Length: 301
Image (cartoon, rainbow, N blue to C red):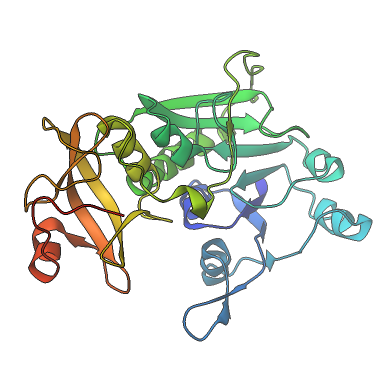
């Protein structure tokens, strides 16, 4: 097929690679404009932009798709379909209607659960037993379009937003290739029941509340790992927790029960396995303790 690809972050690169590998013609790539990044705040192209450019594919970075001129430029490509993966802009109806077969989206949830911006994080934070990918034919509503293919993945006790992100990126890429390879793309309406919305992650959510049950605190930590990173503060130092496990122990919520990073929660306790101090890299518990010992009885603030 002759395709337009629309995507921005690392998650989308896997699908673009898979489409190229499957022999589709990528006529043009749309991505978010370069943003200032790094210490020098130099403008940096998105991961999709950088990869597409390395493959010699034309990249367009409009700020908006609302103008008639921009919509006409899109339609002039005459694509069979558009593939959209975490692009970052709403697609107006003229854009949705321009490709011969429509626009198809890789959405990282089991729709209609977790429509919206942060489905991977919200699924883990909510304690869901599974996540997955839905390939959807797009329409004007927020992730409301009919479903073309679905794959499910379990969420394990040590699943983090990063590990689930990586798994879903691979699965989504494979599913999109399968959908576009079908003889006629059949899609079914989403169920009307079970709709939830995955609102954007707010950094204000990141402080850890150890008064909650241990499993809930673990889900909160893993859903925000590695970014923005759930954190606690102790002796004026902010510490992010990136990986943990529940353990059979009890004590006063927010107090370390030993010198091996076991901390009590509202019920149960957690052992902290991977941490990151301000200004430092992520490290395992043993490495962390060599430079920042925490005695039993210490409380977080």
